[in-house]
Amino acid sequence: MSLLVKDFDYNLPLELIALAPAKPRDHSRLLLLEKKTGKISHKYFYNLIDYLQAGDLLVLNNSKVFPARLIGHKKDTDGKIEVFLHRKINLDTWECLLRGRLKENLLIVFPNKLLAQVINNNNDGTWLVKFNLKGDKFWQAINKIGEVPLPPYIKRDKQISSDKNNYQTVFASASKVGSVAAPTAGLHFTTSLLKKIKAKGVKIVCVTLHVGLGTFAPVKTENILDHKMHSEFAEVSATTVKAILKAKKNGGRVIPVGTTSCRTLESIAWDEIKTKKTKRTLNFWTDIFIYPGYRFKVTDALITNFHLPKSTLLMLISALAGREKVKFAYQEAINEKYHFFSYGDSMFIY
Image 1 (cartoon, rainbow, N blue to C red):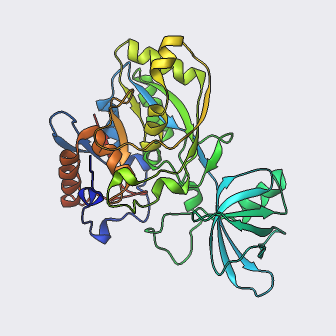
Image 2 (cartoon, rainbow, N blue to C red; image 1 turned 180 degrees about the vertical axis):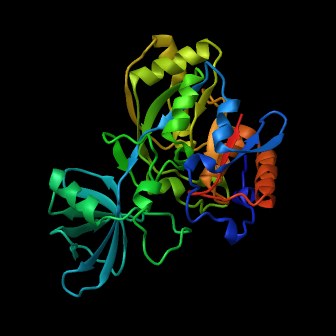
């Protein structure tokens, strides 16, 4: 079987890349795509409630983004080094992406008395870095000096202060800090809209998937089957497992918000859970790669953003709705001047 990356390409005018979110958040545009027919409608995100039904289950990713981009300098030469915190290894050591002239044992100085030593090259694009601070002192420094690692297509000379708020969902949990990139489909929700959705009889639950930079890594292989996804940590509570089983039993739709929530749900061994009637909290690492031909186990519909050409995220939604239908929908969005990517408009595939 051969699936080529070029089959998931499209041309996007640069002026359609969103550099800031809609205000209010739920006033972004919403493209509705019917999976079976390919029918397309154009609404606003606050109209989503009209397409949800009592008994549906909305699944949010409550992971909280932290300011993972640090700007420091070499202790010996003052040369600039950018550090992107990627994955915590232990109390004082992180797997990081680094930019600058690098070598092992390099010492990096940051503001707020934060120091780092480059331990070794992992030879996969990341480096092992050890910090002098740990625990609360480390996080206090990070929250003060760190920047939100906005995607490279949001080009700015300097990060604006509102990004730390804009690039965070209203339902992100303070106890679930761990994402280096936002689960962007959730950015469209307001507290008010969520209350209205609940009042309609739609149940809302959360999963946690800490979004790593690997989620947005480009597919560098010609055949997508040769691409390897980075692992990301996920958690699904017993309450959420029970709610999903109940919704399925009662004929309600399970609707993940974003590809991160979708990948989390599809990573679970549902047949085993139903057989053993397990309703426990699940913690696991997932590197699931969903592309056309995949059979969804639990996802019935999906709220998602408009994704980069040739991306694994575009492949996922093509698996759900069909590649040709998605290709047509994206061209329609371009014709209608929708805004694309993290701060852009949204889709509801149902």
